[in-house]
Amino acid sequence: MLVVLAFIEGQFKDVIVDTKATAYIRRLKAGHVDPKWYPKAADVRQQCLYRDLFGKETMLLYCSPKDVYCVDMVERDELNVLINAMKHIEHILEICKTKDDVVRIFPLICDNFRWKGTPTAKVFAKEIWTKVMK
Image (tube, rainbow, N blue to C red; front, side, top):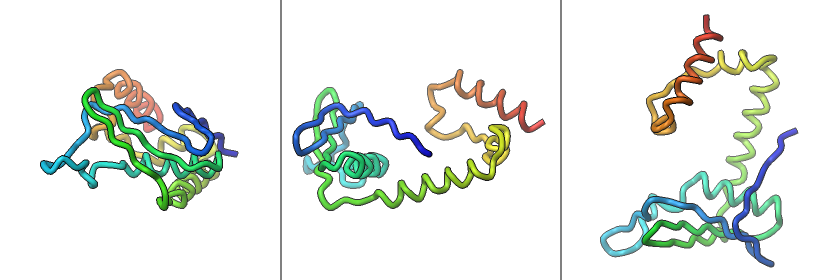
């Protein structure tokens, strides 16, 4: 069984409004929001999950200190991508008997943006992988 926690900032009668804080909202020279930048794919998948779980339409509200951008989620459906990812996780957990097995399946690669600014997390992860991979 997979438990999903949902933190909803704004829930109204017919719609859920999910806010996303960002340093800035990327706009093109013409003033329009860059469609390659927003909405982010992970945000769309999250909204599709919320729509399915709560039975309400959803929308995204990107907020920066100087700008806002609202995205309507009508006719967007990325739920299958999320369901397939969950099936992969479920399969991995069926194969792995211990948390060490999970570590052995995935190489530790700390050179991407996810690790930027998290030196203690990086040290913690390296200690776990080093211990398991001996």
